[in-house]
Length: 128
Image (cartoon, rainbow, N blue to C red):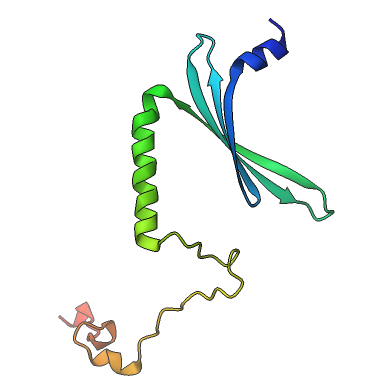
């Protein structure tokens, strides 16, 4: 079998998701035993200082015995993110007017609160 025949046999079905500088490839592949598995590849484009570019790729292999748990877990964590943060993208890269809210600094009079660290007395254990 030639390399080309093997490549055609291996690539069964593909879908592509383009997302800005990233592209995700979902490829159904064939094992030597003629069973199927999934590869998910993230390809991210990077531009060099001289204007040329290169891609970094990361790939995972997902086999049928893991599909159900993987799918359930993916749905669970994506639902969690949407429920906690909504589906609006919030990042400096996507919103030019984005400003991160700084936590409020405690006022000097907060030390009068009973559990505020500044209200504790410094105890030197040598004195006891």
